[in-house]
Amino acid sequence: MIAQHLPDPDFTASPARAHWFFRYKLYHIPFWIVYHYIWWVVALGNPVKVVEALFTTAVFKFLFYVVWQALAVYFNLYFLVPRYLEKGKYTQFLVLLLLTIVTTAALIVPGYYIGAWAAGKTLQEYYGPGNYAFFHMMLGGPLSSTVAATTFAMSIKLAKNWLQTRQRQQMLEKEKLETELNFLKYQFNPHFLFNSINSIFFLIHKNPDRASASLAKFSELLRHQLYECNDHQIPLNKEIAYLQNFIELEKLRQNDNLEVIFEVDQHFSRQPGIAPFVLMTFMENAFKHVSRHSHELNWIHGNLRLANTSLTFNLSNSVSEERNQEVVHYGGIGLKNVRRRLDLIYPGKY
Image (cartoon, rainbow, N blue to C red; front, side, top):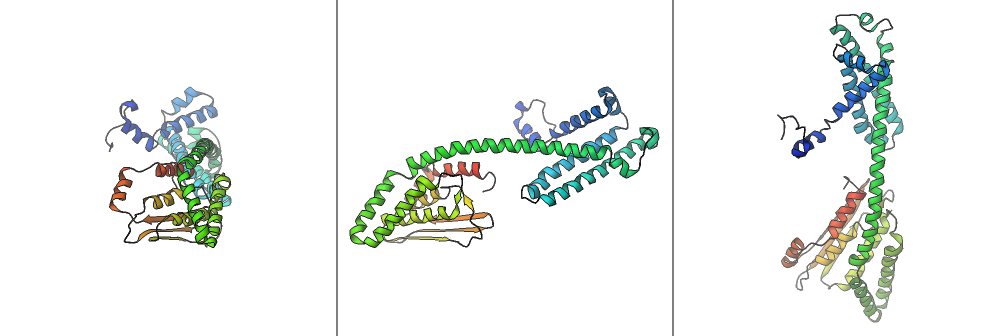
């Protein structure tokens, strides 16, 4: 912890301190000082006169502008925008934003009084003739300056978010192509295809009805893989149907002493979307790494439920000691790919 030292001027020589400096956004302090200096230069028309004023009691008025407007901007960006604007509560957002601006302008006015008081003068003597009623002063410079600072900060924030969203979208496009290729190459592999076809072939003579049902599931699986998963998001019920079809086909290839229980809460008030194949890797891993005991039950248990916009997917399987060690030491790329896709599609929300 770096509490008793100021950050080094050379941050490259002290990355921990640089991280501390940027984590707490201390670099915003000089930004706000420069911003208000420029604002005063525009208002007074003389940069030298502004510098001279900062070495007098007028600095109190300057500090009131800097501190209160910075707090108003951060309150708007980190509380009002995510809680109201981003959730479509536009009326509440506008009302609270207006209240924030008016309150901030009112809190700046005492800086005028303190500056004159510290100089031992009245407002008229210090600032010149004029109307110095509290509300008249508030509706002048403090209000317009606060509106400008809030608008300027929101413009920067929205532009930054737009650029980040665009970059993330480009990365998603690239990741989607790589995922589709990897899925075809590694996940939905010929081994699975041939085994499924062989299992259905043997069922045709043994149990024609079951073979027909399995063939329909196999067809749905291929259709989903080739045609229905090309969008960034698909309806959740299609992803669930894909999982269930995959389970039924895998059960054809397994021994009779494998118990598979997959429960789904189908009572959704609406049909949400989900990125395709996010859940599939976990189900494949469950079948891949499930135990192969011949004299005791092997099992795969899972459930999926949706509460508001939060999806919970639980999955577990029995393992043998040897296979468990194999998973720990020789894990594949499937989970890494899933984590990477979640980072891109649901950053900070999973």
